[in-house]
Image (cartoon, rainbow, N blue to C red; front, side):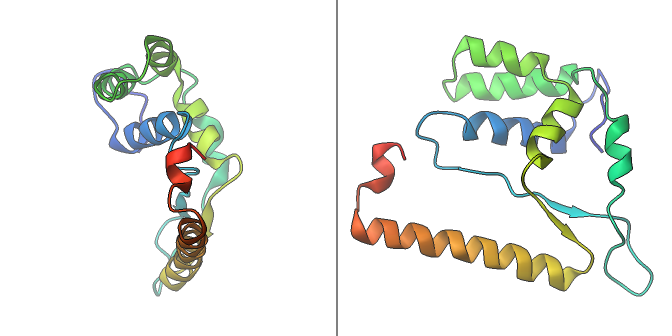
Length: 143
């Protein structure tokens, strides 16, 4: 729901904050977040277009409860205090914009979701397997 409520943790927003923060860490195994964007259910199955115009209405304020939970989790994972303070200040809009800026798959039918996401995942896995075959310590080198 990406609610900016001050008293409730929004799990979608929490996941996006955590993914972004961990992806930005030096040596992170995660290089990107690939959201699957779906609109409302369409008659006869599948999904309608995603209502991108609604993104403009996302809050410019932080979701205090969500950001505090994210900071607590990231603290347990060993992220520094500077990063934690930055997480506390992120607005709902900033988090969503950072994920959707250059990535995402808009799906109009379940088959599209499976084929597009599956193809991207398979491409990444095959690329990484080739890297590991040529250099078994590739990912230990912080690439």
